[in-house]
Image (cartoon, rainbow, N blue to C red; front, side):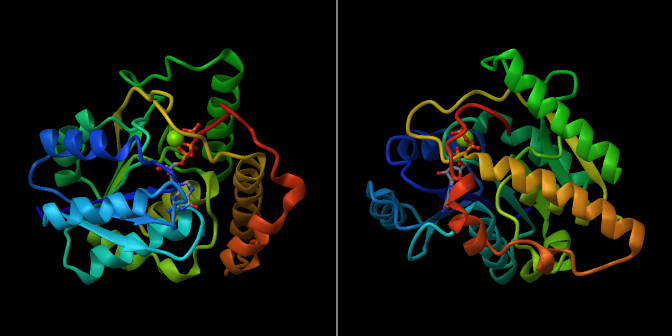
Length: 264
Ligand SMILES: Nc1nc2c(ncn2[C@@H]2O[C@H](COP(=O)(O)OP(=O)(O)OP(=O)(O)O)[C@@H](O)[C@H]2O)c(=O)[nH]1
Ligand SMILES: [Mg+2]
């Protein structure tokens, strides 16, 4: 199976070299696409150097920080255009340990979407405070209950999609960015009748670098679930276009307050 690992980066210069090394040690056959948003710390330039040395590494440069959701959508389109059979979402900060890649690759043989789950036996979030576990776990139960998504961890961002899924879910209409992006994709995959499977992961906090998490991302996720539930009941479609655009979300400075170590 021809697979692509999409890694969005914004200021991940210290994480990138060990991450690439670890990925190839666990999944030597995969290709990697780094989607860098003109990181001020030079992550994009370093990625170009890796590309020159290794044909399995590609780099997509974007002009500025446009958000995680659009970075993944750009990556998904690249995967479709370049004939990949499956595409991964993976953070650059080692929260998504490459050692699980073989589990994903095995599971995707009999699934359309594989989600690395912290909330099934074998999964865990060992560094987290009780409050953080409560917010993340509660958010997941809320989304599951409201939307009926058949997974225990629908905000998780360590995933592998089959190409057919990416071709089916109309990527251009997705506008959410953070948790909402993950929930929306899981919801759409479910609505198309695809098979979702979870594989356990132990989620570690980022090793180095700064978090880009903010309160607005949590709020966006909550609003998405409410809107999706409402549109399900009333049959109102085109949910995404009624969401805030990425620009609107980014410009909403009253929600910009940093929310360290809360949810994913
Ligand atoms: N290209 C791009 N990548 C981004 C953007 N925002 C975050 N990222 C990357 O997306 C991944 C997840 O971001 P994180 O800051 O780790 O967010 P998080 O995992 O929710 O939060 P912490 O792990 O607690 O820091 C990392 O690889 C980031 O570098 C963005 O706007 N554009
Ligand atoms: Mg992270």
